[in-house]
Length: 421
Ligand SMILES: NC(=O)N[C@@H](CC(=O)O)C(=O)O
Image (tube, helix red, strand yellow):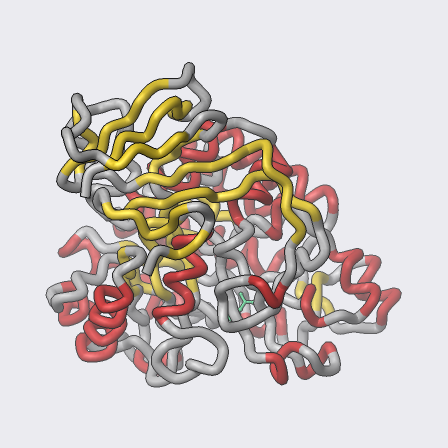
């Protein structure tokens, strides 16, 4: 398939024509190219998510690789990294290859499996990281996300082990003894609501420890869903010293605060918890400064019975794939260079996803891209999302920016705002 995307603005620049032929950006349009009128649309490199929960295998009632891939393509993504907290856990070559194969079958985004750091996410014994790295899935990121690799000796060994194949350990930073029984951010609001708090220091202490470990062994550390101003300061200092650390922030931590827990609606329950307005401001600044490298969705679908229940029984997590770019636009406005870097270029680099996050102005770049209508407004209807779950915290909100089309290696996965296959 060949396309001629007419009158499109690449990253906010003056309108131009963009030719796509044989999976690549082309200097000239092919004769048989299908013309897409893209007046008023902005082209971005296809978004890349380093933190997605696709729930398959094991919780196909909440999401599948197929439904999650649809949500991703509709959100403008061309690649997602699938977290390992499935059932069975993605801690062997067999499970990561299964997820990878399911992604290929769905064919809407590149699904890059993340492997568990420890067997069964139990934090006791290293999983076979090398076998997952050399499997067909080619795992590069390892994470026990949902749980912290709390044992410092195990964390050190994991960091050492992945150096051999330039892997990265993505840490869910949560000191478990400090968060026992925690239901939300520890602060004024938790005191008022009578809910046990998750103190900021539980995150900051692990990040401080881990940057020291990463520095000591000279390995790559990635910090998942950074949520506090104190974490930002630890990262800022580590980066200034040249530690090989990268970090992500979620769209919800850039927008929402712990005040939302006041209605006890579990749709706002998430790990790490929503923090204070001061934390939100610090996270925004850190993303602008580059102290935080990427925006990752932490798309965490949950079945109705796991969310529409009493707060303390509800599972933590929020949907994110279909709303991430609109939330970024509502927080930062049309800062296209920032959006492209933090949502595509930098995540592709961290996950080593060659062919993603490329320069759309250069002929020969793989045609992984998305077209956005920044002037469109839409109301979030949980029932209308492609995800199998409904736990979006943005229900009823009017958001800016609509994803009109997405292309994976030159093939349309989304056209006119609808999944093509
Ligand atoms: N981010 C979340 O709130 N939930 C994650 C796992 C986790 O990090 O707790 C999930 O898998 O649902």
